[in-house]
Image (cartoon, rainbow, N blue to C red; front, side, top):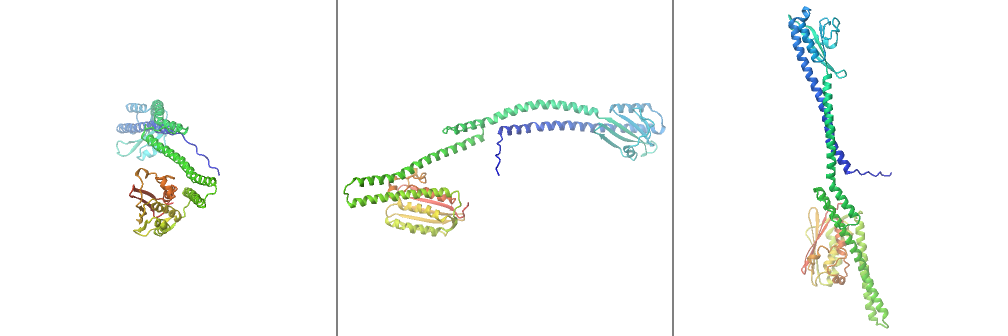
Length: 476
């Protein structure tokens, strides 16, 4: 199944949307809440005012015996008319027979008014109800008898319109919308200005990268407007510096490989041409020349073998290593046994010391190759009648191997480069000892494949110590 390529989203789009949501959406939500809250508060205030007016009218109707005398009281009627006009509504007085005896609209007097609210009010339950669809309030209030406290003689039903409140809310809403539109224009302008200001350093950074990608690799990329852009610029500059170093190292490696492979062939060619140019050359001279040719062939073969080892190391880094439980002391014993004849030729003392036994996860073949190079170098670049001491130690996480010698040492200025491929401190001496300049590169590669580290300490003319640290447990 073919995977769909994910479309990249512009930072500008994300930034504009984010600022718009943060700046505009809360403003619109707050505007709607303000209108709704205003409307709700006005309705609640109106309800309280109606209840107060109903309480006053009810007391006056009770004291005047408005229901008992069944007479018209023009003063109370006027007061009811004023209250009904105040709320743009209607007041209806209902007696115990549910007959309407007073209607401020003058339309229903003598008729009957039976509803749930009126029935419940005769039971002593005052109620208020708001009709959102038709925009009016209904408030019922009991009218008590004068001679008998607690007896309800009638019910006052007040209907009040909320159109005024809605008009006020609409007017406030229009003002809020006007404010929101003006604010929206200011916010949009602010967002565009912020977007330009915020993304300008990133655009400069992008343009610098494009120029570098176009071939201007020497240009320094540094956009230090913000802390983040400065860190990004520093990281990219370091990456480009590392890439340039790798490119130079690769070119140098190819040049070195060409030179190292060509040198033995040139020597063989010179020796062969010399032999062919001689007539009746002595047999001893033929043998000497043939021995030299054989040595050059061996040297060429060793260079090729080391190159193949490096290639295998590079390839194996991404593949599964052949990890087993390895007795490290036993492995070192085997390496020293194999190299002891070389040491004896120069009367070099070769010793192995262990602080504790070590069994660790390792690729035995690769680790043996890397450690052999270290010990062999310590023998080759040593003095006559010198010594090489190999020490094994461990803690709860790592094992440690030290290879110390009494050799010629490494000048301090060359110690950082000795692990480079084909790098030699003393090229003439390296060729005399048969070195290819690849041994330490192979060793470092092997140790790093085991998630370990290698360090060197050396004093010129006094000797060298290589310190290796490798985890006891291999981490894939």
